[in-house]
Length: 315
Image (cartoon, rainbow, N blue to C red; front, side):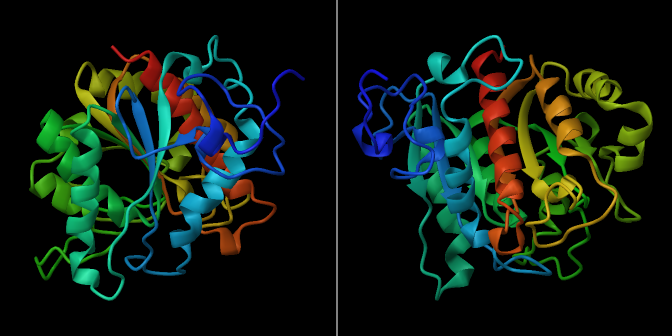
């Protein structure tokens, strides 16, 4: 077995390369990558944002980052299936740990997430963020736009998350973030896509929607082709709400909706996004208290792993 060591999160000698140790043991980090606050030479920083106070149904996504990291241990030893290379050989990936804030002052949480993201992005590393409820994407987008300019959004979800914030106050809510992101000019709806939707919203704000029935009828590759046509060469941010996946495959989430994508369909679409100029990604809404056999966390870990492969060969 060669040099077998546990706890690669703390003992890994290199940022690159897969880390092999017993799946059932060892300190957890995403894909067993080194845990560090020193991002010198790091291409992608994995970080958690354990927020669930913005959810409208079941809480528990604050435990999502921990669950996704634990599930990722099962796939840390090998490359994504069908990928001709291991993204961990091409990219220097580190686990930066989680964003922190004073839970007794919830009004300060959005700014804390922005500052956390600004700190990481200022080092030159890209962010792969583990949620947490979907509100976290709003402050993350603000930080990314400061660095990269307005973005195309590639959004997987059961819900549009563009519901009108009638109060106009920017309240912390996981169903209004992309209403504000579009109004603020953070994302261009005409150059953005939403995939897997299956809940009604009368105003989709100009986003291109490929709902779950359309995916089922026309297949993953037809959606992939349209995404490439719409996004083109623009810089893009990928946000994946795990409730895009049908609760048969991802029950561990706060607002499950029947009729969603299979995990195979979701992975096929993500794999097909090779060549898009991604600047960042998050996977959110994993709530392990409602999971079965950790299958939701495992789906999230696979999706994040696939994005690393996309980022490794971005233009």
